[in-house]
Length: 263
Image 1: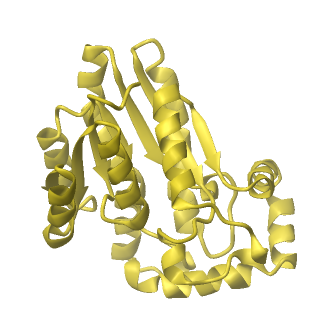
Image 2: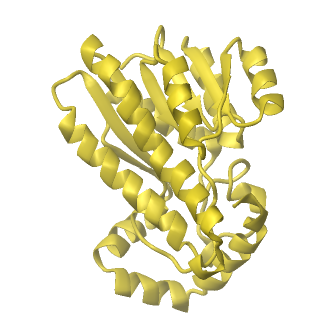
């Protein structure tokens, strides 16, 4: 799918990785639609890029439907918005759980459902859903985030099969720990077990590559994390044991505490 000349809807555009994506998409000749829930943040970004801003709260179901209607000309959806959703589930209020599930899972599913029919009719389009390696293997203190990212991965891979032969591709891009920008970088915490990180540029390159080459699943992380997540998905009890012995649970809890105010 060619990005140049295509209309791209990017959610979560005001985040660190979202802004990097927005600039790269503009540089590649996309007609860009950016969305966020705060007008004072999304509108200046749109103006600086010559993009169109659509203010919408992805936790609000009516806003999600309105967003899909206003962005009905979309050729490529990049569902990048997400809440950190870290911390033990017993520490969550019902409202916090609902918001995490709505933003991280339901909104990408519904935007895909609402925008795909036009793409199918046109015989071209792409749905790029930004997941996480947390959608491949679970960790202590991230059960809510794990749930949304496991679900997003399953949805993307299943929808890809449903749309096979229509000209519409579906990709799930799953970063590990990202330095310099994004929800992990914002915590200022060290990675669990000293795990290596990737740059925002690597994530953006992976997203663009997934769209242009119609790749089903792209994992953006150092080799050891990609292998670890694959093994962890097959042998969850072994993964949990290794994580405990490496002290990963303590590191994740420190990250969760720093993200508490973003629930």
